[in-house]
Amino acid sequence: MAAEEAPQAADHYKAEIERLSKELAETTHEKIQAAEYGLVVLEEKLTLKQHYDELEAEYDGLKQELEQLREAFGQSFSIHRKVAEDGETREETLLQESASKEAYYLGKILEMQNELKQSRAVVTNVQAENERLTAIVQDLKERWRSDCRGGRLIEYSGMRSETQVLSCFCLSLGIRLLVKLCYVDLHYI
Image (cartoon, rainbow, N blue to C red; front, top):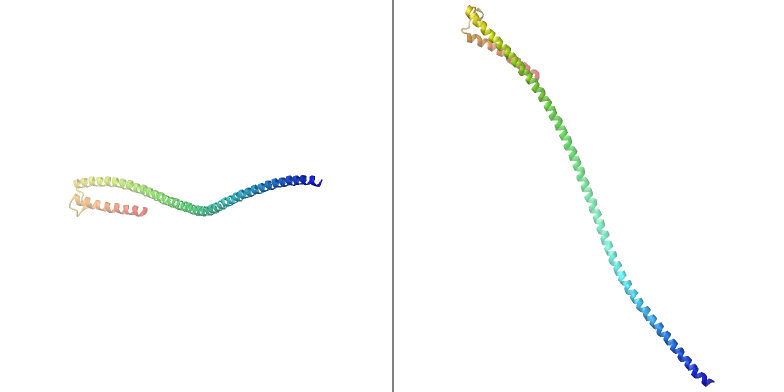
């Protein structure tokens, strides 16, 4: 029995060795496959880490650019607001100046209109006075002629001609008219 068991035990051991060799080969193959998968995972991890580092560097760059843009926008907004405020202030100043000038010129226009009305009134008065004086001079000429014809020259004694008398009369009228005009001009000034 021992001799019969020896070949069976040897076959059993052979089968066991084959089984264990297969298991070892499978385990080794699985370990190699796991190692290969591990290498692939490590490579993928390195690739992802490198990509992550690139993205993080890009993020930092964009973040810094955003900060610069915010700062530039803030400065631009401040400048724009200042320009707008200056423009509004300038516009208000111009409007005030324009309103002031308009009021001044309206006052001047009213003043000149009043002066024009007064001047027209003076011209009308002077024309009326001129017509009145012309009528008086005409009347005096007629009287003079009639007095000369009637021999009544006593009132104008010492004067040699009609021209002297009329000149003297016109001179006195002219002085009175000049005094009136000066009085009117001084009155309206």
